[in-house]
Picture 1 (cartoon, helix red, strand yellow):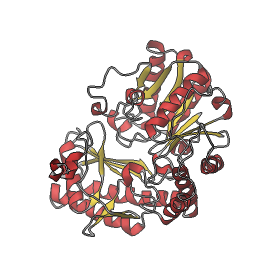
Picture 2 (picture 1 turned 90 degrees about the vertical axis):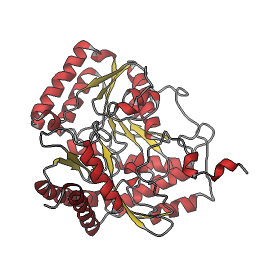
Picture 3 (picture 1 turned 90 degrees about the horizontal axis):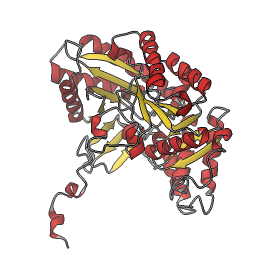
Length: 429
């Protein structure tokens, strides 16, 4: 036996991972996680938007249990797993009518890489436009497309080229109305076309309809609608990165539906598998037919019969249990509760989001980002066993990502814990 194994086993893990807590959960149920002693923690991280159906939803567990004895894996280049076909059929029914082709992978970053390769082959063009504050993944191409925090790119550069960054209409940061921010960012996009990449060498414009790691900032509907017009005018593909915002999270199946637009490619992951590793991209037959056979693939992409079964059960559960509607209703309740707290605690500079993808941004008296207070409030919440996550380029935003099964009383309880944390950090109001 290796004598070194007497050390804390956590030290065996690579230090490259950050850890919100030292919690070692042995059980998950609904919105809760439990440790070995039976202590209950309210998980409003959802594994960063993964367990939309809650921890260990019985429907998902049953689907995995029934699939496991039948087939674990079938490599897509060798065979075609029936559960993967079933998943494509289900997605075909719930995605927009023009979307009818699907490619599966394991993670959001893989799906991002896939969408870029598809866009390049479908258009014959080389370049991609992303937006300031974006997060698209940690592989090299996806990292080059990510601008939410320098830590994600730290000491990894130079990164792949052909990526161009345009301003995101974050009206709160500019101190403008959404209309003013939209107008400014559209002008900057036009300037980018004049000075950095021409439309006829641009394969895709890729955007998160709500910035994730960048601070949970929704893109105004008029901005997304104008992007659609620009892409149509120049033959550029419009890609919606719905990795964190998809599968009911924002009160719609996909967030882009709030803007009533039709993307050319949808990137999906996280909430699709309820905890099983699966991702995908969805597009049209006309676009997918231009993807030359054999030029992309992967050992496990589409081959996990268990992940596909879990994804099928996830989709069924989202609709059968009205989780999209619940996300909308509970999101409105959460936003209202937070706005009431904002009136008492002006350090909360902004409340924003859609559905159950909600942010509280902390600022000082001059309106500058207040990462210190954010961290203290987060730690106070953790002490009372409420798990929240920070985000934003300045680390001054707390994001609320409850499982979509959360109840009215559970939202109320979480708001009480949050106010207690504010009192501990800021003093009684």
